[in-house]
Image (cartoon, rainbow, N blue to C red):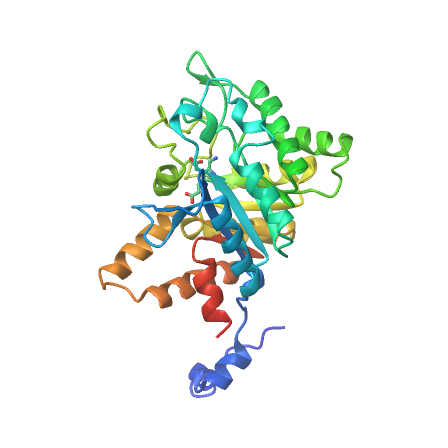
Length: 332
Ligand code: PBG
């Protein structure tokens, strides 16, 4: 039972804030490197990197460099890395066949990290957009993003990623029925131990802008993603999405973007009590980093404060481009 509030001066709430030690004793949540998943961008070639203009400090890396980055991340204690391929315009097609090519950039990178024996979980992205000539996550037929045919393609993509050695599959496409279809196929093909972290509550957000530059999808994208990603004004619908994905076999669920959607994160965690993550997306990284570069904000402090917000909202972890920088601070 909560005691009735005693009048001042009994309730001097500042007593518990007097020193770092007392603040430590009463701290309600904590952030650790175990909470971090690091999204990285891949590109073709060897021993090269490319600075992404709208994400200062973030680069596309060739596979050999991603292996080194994964090794460094593992040494920092980061539990997982998440791969996103930059696909050249010339490789994008209408049928998106590159998406399930066992030797596509993403699958080669997964294998390379596995073959190097690095102790880090590899997460991959399932959606057609990097491979799609029109930049959408699904097939476009007569101007419409078709659901069921897209799900068939996503299942092939999932199986190729599982075969390459991915630990966690991340369907970010927002098609209906994809989790169930993938789970069934994984079971049937002998990949019972591959996890699915569903992008369950993924909103149609303008905060993805820099990411689309990073994976080369901005130029290609015709129109918007409003017919499959969620309306930012909705909250109850997010719970329906999560409930459905859990029923279909998701092991973990995600809310995306992060900072503007902490109410959703809290609601999902409170309602389902399952492993729940947020994606602090490219636009969130870009705005914090840009302000810090201008000297308007203290970059390290706002980074750690933003990550604290995710933990306070009840989340189990955060996909964030800040992962290595935050890990270095957390490791002292
Ligand atoms: C594509 C995908 C997107 C992100 C992850 N996977 C962008 C989109 O849906 O357009 C966004 C990540 C970020 O902004 O950091 N399926």
